[in-house]
Structures are given as structure tokens and as C-alpha cells.
Length: 276
Image 1: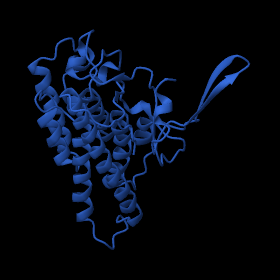
Image 2: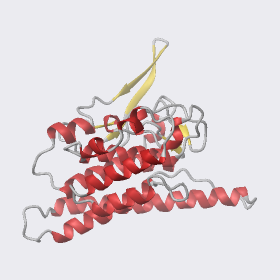
Image 3: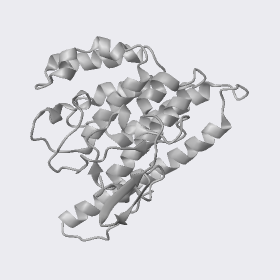
């Protein structure tokens, strides 16, 4: 935790901390937080919150994962309870519990079983960005699924005892997504999840998930009349900031990947740890 949190110092939604040594004892002071995302979406969320409002919150959360990935780390324990806010209105989020972070493609060390991707059920797995994306997909499902449609549809054994992810388990997951898709407005997002949940050649990707959520927001926003109370210019302005930062981070990730390939091919290249 102490090793990774300082790297978040320049992020827009970082975990702010102070540290130092006092009387030969090292200390870390983190911000006092109010509620986690699960509590907010399940207990406190106002009925006035439109799906567009919710998508904005989801993108805030995804941005934290994207920034961690841009640093080259995987979180390994993405779940609703690890997204917290410093105020009860959840105006912004912090990502906590960085004690099991790992470098991408390094030996994995932990997580929460419910949010495991299939390849994490082996005791000796390799940590990847895709595992975070899989866990985030399940996180959003948990937050969106107010009636528990997904959990009622899927095979409970797949979640609780997933030593082997059988075809039956995969079919159960897809059926759960399909059932939930019929209940909420995020149709294209759930189609994306169905297509990539278990696709080894093209697995879930946090950048692609964000792009699809942005697309859903645009579709929803375009259907709301300009004179409607639901049409929030303030929210649209905040979304523009999120979208621009998303684009910059994707470009930075692509640049780092290209630099890595150049080094592997012996072409060299300048290193950059710029965080948006």
C-alpha cells in the first residue's frame, strides 16, 4: 500500500495521503471516507438519478482503473466496496485497498472470489489488466442490478466454487447478462460484455468498456429533449472532461505499448510516466 499510493499523487481522483516519520515511527494518513459505491448505489442513490447520471459515476470509477493500468499496475481486487467517496453525495471516488496490486503479467497474489475472472481460479495465476476489467464488469452488474436479476439467473456454483469454469458456467453468465439487459437502458454495453466475457482472443478491456459506456451515455442523452429537467448542461460539461481525459489516457497507453515494442525490437525510445 505504501509503495503504490504515492504513484497516485498526480491523478485527478487519487487517494490523498500524508506520510512521514514521527519519533522513529513511520505513519501514513489517508483521507476519511464516507461511503462505498455499493452503499451509495443500493442505499443512498436518489430516484432522480437518471441512467446518464449513473454512467457518469461508472466512468469516474473506470477512470481510476485506467490510471492504475497506465502506471503499469493491476489492482487485483476491483469490487464495489473498494470505490469510496469523501462525501455522502459521492461527488467523486477514491480507489482503495492497493495492498494486492501487481505489475501487469507478473505473479498474481489475491482478490475476491466473486469477482474473479476464469483464469484467476488457479492458485498460480498471472495478473493482467483483463482480470481487472472482468471484475469491473461484475462490479457494474452488481451496482446496476437492483432486483438481483443477474445473481438469480447465474449458476451459484460458478461464483462460489469456480475451480473450473465449465461451458455451463459460461452459458449461465451470458444468460444473466441477457436477463439484465432487458431491464436497463445499457443495451449496447451488455452486448459488449456478452461478446467479450469469455473471448480469450479479444477479452474485456477497460478502455473498450469506457468507450461503450460513453456511447450509451450519448445515445441516452440524445433522446432527452433539450428543455427537459433531465437535460443537465452541468453534467454534459463534466462528461466532456471525462471523455477528453479518457482519450488522452488511451493515447498515453498506446504510446507506452509502442515504446515497449520498440525496446523489445532493439529500437530504443524515451520513457514516459505521464499520468493524466
